[in-house]
Length: 452
Image 1 (cartoon, rainbow, N blue to C red):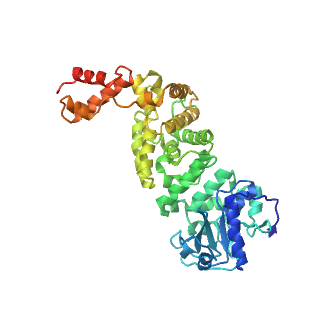
Image 2: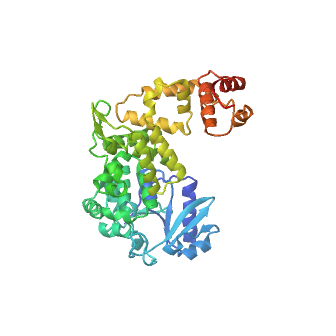
Image 3: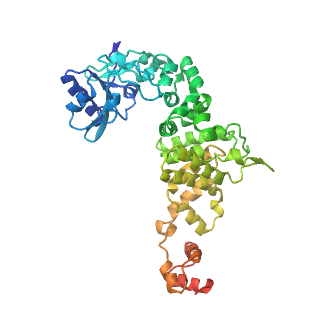
């Protein structure tokens, strides 16, 4: 049951603060342990990003013993303790409960026994406890054995675990893909059987789990597993429809649109060191989502307008998943503009400068590079633009406008649509290097636009 492993905790600030919470609770006569994914990660030699704590103390007792707390989740036996601005989830031991709504327990039943608490948790590898005082792993669920065998399985009956909280099906995919574990047979069967139930989970929780899968290790494998386990068709049917959509082999020797998308996600993870933003990850996932509906075969397979169609589809998909308007705008822009790189060597100076002067252009570069590496492998356009970004100054790419609307009014022009036409043309000529100062711009306008 208790095993002393040669675990050397990452004794950084967050671990020491977690340990201090446990120490204080124990001095008050309560049991307390580190629990969950952080224990799994410590055993694997991975530095945990956070530490969850479980204890025999009731929520009111937790709150009364710490100066700074948040009463979020108290009704479910959870208190948030804040130490130096760091949040720690401290949960009271609980017994198994019924989950009629597939998320929240119908009734919270507290326990003084840590073994009753861990057997209600999701997966064996997340059900171990760590005692920092004695450097001991307490394992009631054979998590150590499964960790060593690289097997993911639920604690107890898998169908019961997934009906309690249907999001656990997606969490299973996340852990299995990220850790490169096999999903145990009964657990696997249960996910496939209950997969349609994922639609009962809120869009926000589904979205967050998608983000975890796309931003973690092996995101392409994670996406394939979502499809294999029948979840993808319920949460992202538009992505599921990419499967089997052939592409021209001269540009996409890797395979169909779905295979390509999985590779793009893997390349993005590799290129960014696993630090791709939510925006960039979703753009990679959806950059070719318009291809199934624009597929045609003339002289060869073509997807005319899939960039524009995909950008509009992405807006709807991301809105349904409750991403912010700012995120949606950036994702759709990345998808709408992703084909423009093929023309960069033939662009006029003004067009090129406007292109590389777009907001968040570093994201456009990252998406393009991953897209190329996951298909034909040619990085000519990427290297060309990279050189231009080194060659050109910020002022050359986004120069201060030579004139504005007030200048046009002084010339006698009446405000209206013609203002945009004139100012855009002046900016184009400025970017081309033809107009260099305000006087040149005013003379050009007077000579080329009627209305004054």
